[in-house]
Amino acid sequence: MLEICPPKTPEINMSYQSFEELEVWKRACRLSVDIYKVLKDSKDFSFKNQMQRAAISIASNIAEGAERNSIREYIHFLHIAKGSAGELRTQIYIADKVKLIESEKRQKLCTELTEISKMLQGLIKFLTAQLD
Image (tube, rainbow, N blue to C red):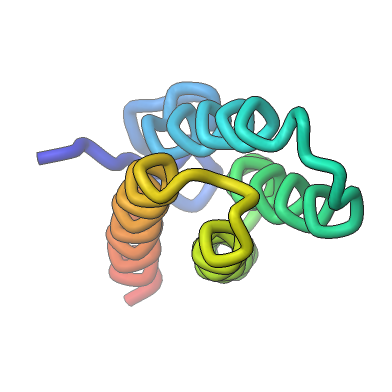
């Protein structure tokens, strides 16, 4: 089971100091790099750009939310990150259908995105419980 801990904030006292320690953030960063590598030779610059932006958005919103001073804002940004994961998963399916990526790569990327989404949901659930 993955350990998911929220950042240390004035409202809650947890064990981790920075979003860089979050496994979900690390995995989202690695996924962004993978997307860049998979699409490096793509000539469909608009679609490629949209996929890269969605990928970057996941890790970026985790970081931005963690740096906010409230749990509610953190949760808000985690929801945005989760939405970007769904957006990217959709784009990967389309990229496979139009032959921009191979089916095997699509499967690996979508599996990782599904795991990241689950981790984000777990973190959202944990933080929401802190509000009660």
